[in-house]
Structures are given as C-alpha cells and as structure tokens.
Picture (cartoon, rainbow, N blue to C red):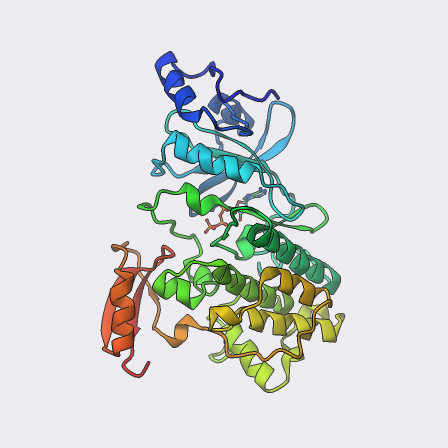
Amino acid sequence: MPWFSCFGRRASSPAGETDKVDEEVSGIHNVRLYMYKELKNATDDFSPANKIGEGGFGSVYKGRLKDGTIAAIKVLAAESKQGVREFLTEINVISNIEHEYLVKLYGCCVEANHRILVYNFLENNSLAQTLLGGGYSGMQFSWRTRSRICIGVARGLAFLHEEVRPYIVHRDIKASNILLDGNLNPKIADFGLAKLIPSNMTHVSTRVAGTIGYLAPEYAIRGQLTRKADIYSFGVLLVEIVCGRCNTNTRLPIGEQYLLERTWELYERKELVGLVDESLNGAFDAEEACRFLKIGLLCTQDTPKLRPSMSSVVKMLIGEMDVDSRAITKPGLISDFMDLKIRSEPKPVPDAKNVSDNLSSGSDIQDSSTMSSGITFTAVYDRSI
Ligand SMILES: Nc1ncnc2c1ncn2[C@@H]1O[C@H](COP(=O)(O)OP(=O)(O)OP(=O)(O)O)[C@@H](O)[C@H]1O
C-alpha cells in the first residue's frame, strides 16, 4: 500500500476540496492517509458483520486493507467536527509514537466529514471482554500472564508519561482500553484520542458506571487532569487484574461492591491475599500478588502527590524498588464525596471554581452537571465534608 503524500492530490476528492485539504495538511508528515473507498472495501461497506465494538468515540470494524493487512478501523462519531488540520496535527503526534505496549496507529482518513482511524488489529480483544468479562470468553489468565500484563501496561504508560515529549496523559486508562495480542501481551489503546475530540463534544463512555470507578477524584470533581489521574486509573486496573473482577459490581453483597474500598479494608486487616482471584485456585505467587495490590493502593491514594510516578511503579512491580517501606494512605474514593447517579440528559459543564468554592464553604448543594471528564452525574454534597 502506497503512502499518500500529504501534499499530493487524492483521486477520490473533488478538485476544490482536494486543494483545501492539501493546504490544510501542508507541514503534516508521517501520517498515512487512506482513501474512504479503500476503508469501505476493507469493511464490506462498514457491514454490521464486521463491527467489533462500539465506544464513546464511535464504531470499530475489522477490515482487510488492500495489502492484506487486517486492521481495526475506528469510525469517529459524525458529531466530531474537528477541522482537518487540527485533526491531522494530533494524528501526526500519535503516529510518531511507537512502543511495544501501545497499539500502533497505521493512519487515518479525513475525506469530507469522515474522520477514521486505522489501527493494528489485536486478536484477543480487551481485558474488559476477557479477564473481566465474567468467564464468557473462556480464556484463562495464569498468574504469570497477569503479572506480564500489569508490567506491560505500566511500561507503556511510563513511556507516554516520561519519555514522549511533550508527555501524554491518556485520560481513559481502563480495562476496555487494554487490548491483547495473540500471545496475551497487552497494548494500550486510545492514547492521544481525547485530544481529537473537540472540547465542546463530550465523550460519553459506553460503560459509564465502570468508568467512574477509574476516575481520580480530583479529576472527576475539579477537572484537574495530570499524569497522577492516569496513575490512579492504573492503580484501579492493577487491582482488577489481580482480583479478576471489575472495580464496581453491584450484584455483590454491600461491602464488597467497590473493589478499592474492599482492598483498603483487607490491607488494614493484613488480609490482602484473600482478594486474589479464586479462579487461580491458589496457583499464584502470594508475595508478588500482595505487592501488586499494595502498589495499586499506592497509585490510588487520595493525595495525587503521594502517588508514585509510572517509572517507579514499573520498578516496584518488577521488584527493583521496595514497596513495604512506603506508608500507604487511604484511597481517594469519589463515593466518599457524593452520591453518584448517572443521568441520561447531558447538562452544561459546571463552573469548576463554583463547585470547589461550594465544597470548601461546606454548603449543601444539589447539582446536576457534567463532570469535566464528560460524565453526567448528580452530586449531593454533604455539609460534613
Ligand atoms: N486495535 C484493535 N484491535 C482489536 N479490537 C479493537 C481494537 N480497537 C478497538 N477494538 C474493539 O472495539 C471495542 C470498542 O473500542 P473503543 O476504544 O471504541 O471503545 P471502548 O474502549 O470499549 O469504550 P470507550 O469509548 O468508552 O472508551 C473494544 O472494546 C475492542 O473490543
């Protein structure tokens, strides 16, 4: 498959439009541009039979490209009105990032209103559909595999946070964004994607309730987005992988529904080992599993500054840095602050200053609003906070 020069004409676009695109993309390099026609053919006209997923950004199809490569083709939702140049600038950044534990972006299509991303296809779906999918996939994850997945994801995130310049905050680390290749090696998906969506278009996740459990409180409540928010989400994911369950499961008895709360409770009782996934039938390294759970707690501490950097997390996971000498403070839980009720009607983004002012002044507020992270909720702030 040839590389399309960003300066060249594309056969499928009308002349006027092509000139405009040429002008807009001048200076953008390294982005492979696919013609809409090729992606249409690859997916059999985006047939439902080839649809492999649906996320907050749009639908994902499996397709065979002209050169025979199997790809995951993500059609961004039509509401995405981002201009060609802005879109390609972000794509240019993502395309230049390559790492063993990150999903590879092959290129994109920006013809007319279409905004389509073409990725390396991963055979074994996501952690959400396999390990945390309630056993429907029939796949087994040994302790060795889990440990490899945790370390791989940590390395991928450490790369985004500490090696890429300027660094990238993923914003949406969660089990459905960890894809698995044929050998169950993890690859982080969707990095850099949040920036492709215009700020006036909220990305409403398909698994809102699950996503809430991954959100660092300071991000969910005050919109403070830093690398520490990703580290919080990673901590939640780490605990999920060790325990083989989702962070929130309202079908469990009260007291066991929120995994992080439960982990803190068992940590205080020095009974962490009791949380490790029963389906392993005891076939795991107990010292390592408890270490991983403690690292999960370190990453989810309420005070962002106390959370370790991702490179330290990697060192702790592989046993190069001590964990036991570190004090662990209580995890930040948004449920401590508010009664979360997911609402279907999107509302305007709140004035973050007012929210925090009201919190600090201790007044009761009932506020229906959209969190900075794009999730609509009803918050009941309690005077006792
Ligand atoms: N590169 C890929 N290879 C294989 N399958 C993929 C790939 N990218 C996405 N998928 C599939 O498509 C599904 C939807 O992906 P997408 O990233 O759009 O949404 P999500 O992560 O599930 O949800 P959200 O938008 O809320 O983050 C994934 O769960 C996965 O099953």
